[in-house]
Image 1 (cartoon, rainbow, N blue to C red):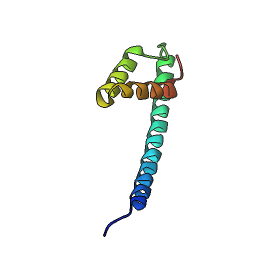
Image 2: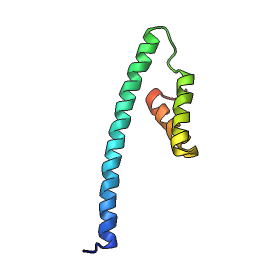
Image 3: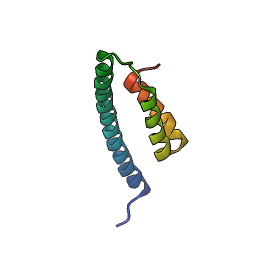
Length: 84
């Protein structure tokens, strides 16, 4: 059975929407975990932001996704810790 281009597109869009829902959920989970890290660090006398750790995260995203991965990582870091 051959599917129409419209049906293929509709199916793919449903998958994209489902993936987006999962990604959003994971980002929200990451934000909550990051908040725990920040609060614990501050409560123990540390700084809100750990720049060496952020550089590791930027490197991981750049390595996996290329130059645009760095932009994505920066957006995630801003969501999770706010602007510095």
